[in-house]
Structures are given as structure tokens and as C-alpha cells.
Image (cartoon, rainbow, N blue to C red; front, side, top):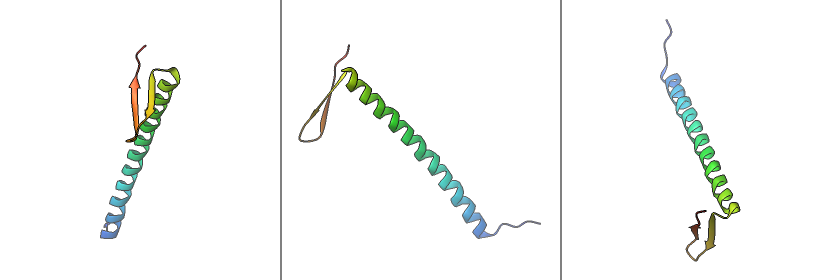
Length: 64
């Protein structure tokens, strides 16, 4: 009969959690890459104007 020790159980749970976190982070980075690309494309096409202010940046959308 196979028995699972507490250490094996903790290691397995840790592996599952770390694997889940890896894929979640990977998905978030993919979304960030797509959003950044979309912003740069809108700036390049002239649909989005960016001006720097004291507090950060101000975005102005110019629909075409």
C-alpha cells in the first residue's frame, strides 16, 4: 500500500501552487504586451496624442 507522507503532500501542493502562479503571470505578461502594442500603434497612426504633465502623462484620443 502506498502512503503519502506530510512532506510529499506539502511539496506537491507547493508545486501545484507555483505552477498555477507561473501560468497566471505568463498570461498577465501576454496581456500587457498586447495592450502596450495597441497603445504604440494608436500613437503611430495619430489616433492618440500623449503629453507629459507634472503628474505623469495625459492621453488625448482623436477619433478618425
